[in-house]
Image (cartoon, rainbow, N blue to C red; front, side, top):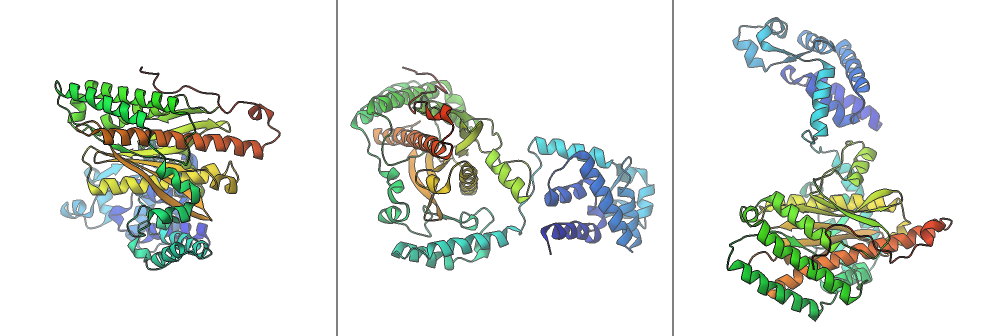
Length: 491
């Protein structure tokens, strides 16, 4: 049976078998959108009317035929109340219930369509994932096992054994493994430091970028200034962040300036937002992290414009994936995104999900899985613009989780045909009484993220030049052309 035929069958079965009190215009539109996706008002309303008429002609049950006939009136459509209402009112049938005006809500198909559309536009109307994910997950895992089996190292063989022991019923639709990704930070796989190198080569050494003693001195000075502030203010602040690539792309004096600006920004936030921070406000936390990201992404030595996107804007990469799969038309919305403008459009490079200062484990795990999905969508979207073999050599899609006072950075990369989700760094956010080492780790994490974005963009630029040799405009520009974004220098 084709996918279109399966969808057709599914919607007809809903109208034929669902209890009558559950069959309403809103439910019908919901089922149709879940299967076919959101279309135009005319297309949706005409299609629903056509399906109602077809099911009505195939139905022999009198009450159901009456219910379906009522729903076909586009100007005056009844939505049945639950059965107890008309039973207790002395009505013996659905038809009698329709004659009781106080038991009926009249709602046209077009009126209902516009109501639901406004909810969908406000992101207040979402579809639950259904069990249809399992066949695709099985195919993803099968392809993953086939790819891994081609590498005959001990770590690849152990990964293969671990995956073989995993049951599909133990997974969820958004589990990394179900999406064909090996999560190297998962305790289930127990990957050692040496094995990171075996699996990802030099890209794994992004975790081992050296720390500069001069930045440690800056962090010590920051702790001293922060302690002076704490004598006057009591405060509590949240989240956590992470790290990236094999060599520093910028000289030390630039990294020192960025570190100085970040530390000044942290001190300002402690002074300005003490009250909101002490209440563990998630919005305040996301806002502060967004400002720190602005400073960390300021004056990148690449020709692309880079922005930190706020206000939970939808991910276009997520939207394109849903449209191609026929599972929806609106992308998921991370708390923050880092985007760069190239190839005549804004492209996503990193995603941030945050909870409150003390998030529960369910929230942290949900955010973690969402970030894996975002990173997969990001990698797939960037793959459309660059040769996959070129992209494999350098590209990371970054997922940044702010959870329980920590900033945690992961990167999704591809090696030998397999996608891996690599834990890069986990560090405390230094808003309270953290020692110099924690402040240094936090600054180091932001600098690693900055370096990873630079490496991504510079190599993407070179990849585009190889792909489009005839484009002299981009080829003649200096790779060190700097674009200022975000917050200005605070020195």
